[in-house]
Image (cartoon, rainbow, N blue to C red; front, side):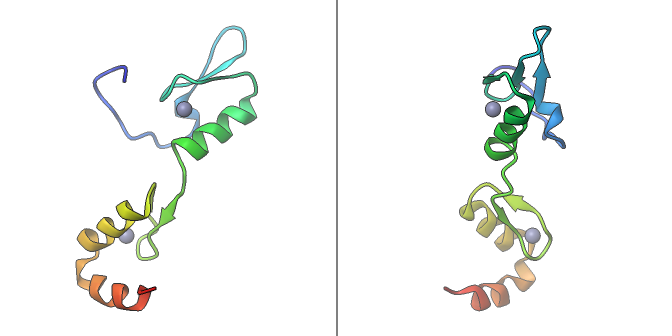
Length: 88
Ligand SMILES: [Zn+2]
Ligand SMILES: [Zn+2]
């Protein structure tokens, strides 16, 4: 990883660097791409994946595990009911 501070990016564009040759570089993993469309897609899927969305507040998480722990901590009050209803 390069750079110490890590801010949570709010937009896909924030993670895309365009160099003077017109190529695009992903700020997160330094992957290079010629097409902007592909770069956006890469960033969206790799670093912005909606993944698992919380049905209670709309937040999204990369993995089901993150989502579950989020629900348990952020929605503790309703967590029990939600867990009971979501038992699969
Ligand atoms: Zn990347
Ligand atoms: Zn939530």
